[in-house]
Length: 250
Image 1 (cartoon, rainbow, N blue to C red):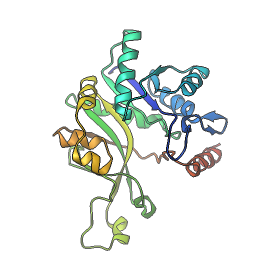
Image 2 (image 1 turned 60 degrees about the horizontal axis):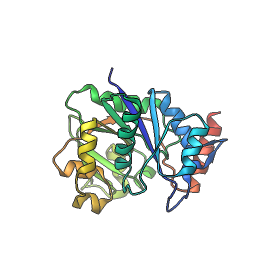
Image 3 (image 1 turned 120 degrees about the vertical axis):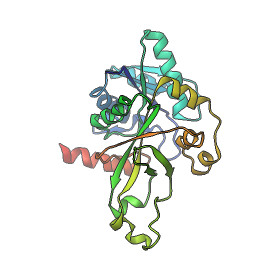
Image 4 (image 1 turned 180 degrees about the vertical axis):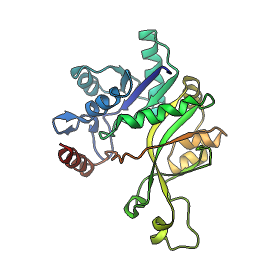
């Protein structure tokens, strides 16, 4: 069994929903919900933040948290700093570092397990999750993925891919299973450091998808399938959807 650490980057600033890690969802903050779900799958979970309010909130519910630089431009770089700080503080060694999104309060422990299982293959350096769908409304927004027969990602795009050339766009969902990206990543520590040091690439800047940096440098991203529908929270409308789902589950 590999030694795993899960890191949850959490920023207070957000263009569409400021302070969203601290948004109340049925009596708990969003960051607490994500943390609790992650802990069901792995022992070592750490929040990485640059904000005192989030830091104090995590301490308040008994979680582990690392204060990181305010200068990080990506969650991956924040993860790397938190990993290195936590490793130094605890003298623990890890074989896989997970970047768990702090805005996914409906995270399921099985999703983490699926991602970790990618690293049973010794040559896996980086892995992520994708969700299959044949629902028309799912093709309206999101990030889409195509991958090869060995489940290595070929490309990620904010456009719906692949195009079904001989069908009208409104009918594509009837003739193909599409795969939407679920923004959780796993790295070996070596790959995480290498990724963080890479310069941004043209495709990454065009699509605003940092994982394209890895692909554009000739690296592989292993893909794991998840069948749990997640709702990343970006707006108050998303919060209300999550609350509705949690109340129905109760």
